[in-house]
Amino acid sequence: MALDKAAVVRIAKLARIKVAEAELEPLARELDGILGWVAQLNELDTSDLPPMTSVVAARLPRRPDTVNDGGYPERILANAPRTEGGFFAVPKVVE
Image 1: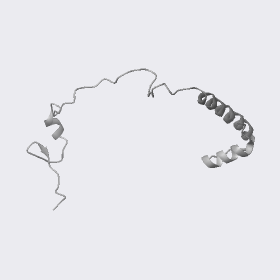
Image 2 (image 1 turned 60 degrees about the horizontal axis):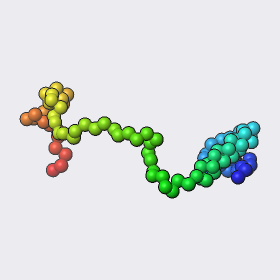
Image 3 (image 1 turned 120 degrees about the horizontal axis):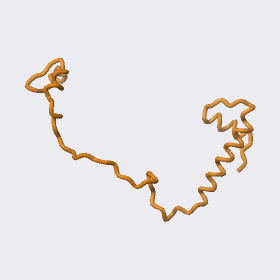
Image 4 (image 1 turned 30 degrees about the vertical axis):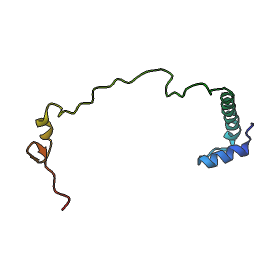
């Protein structure tokens, strides 16, 4: 599929980018090459391959999901403008 200058102008318009007249021909060749590579990839049979998110089979390290107060609630509450009974005190917003 050979792209001409008119196709590049249309693509640039759809992408909302300004392309100078002198850049149209080189850009057409470059886009044509990219489309050629995509066509080569489409020729591959991938029906028996599982989908993947990475080329390396790796698992992220996980920590246990435990609820705690961080071990220093006094330091955290020291940042609050007002506290009551070991909690943040906020103005009432619902009557």
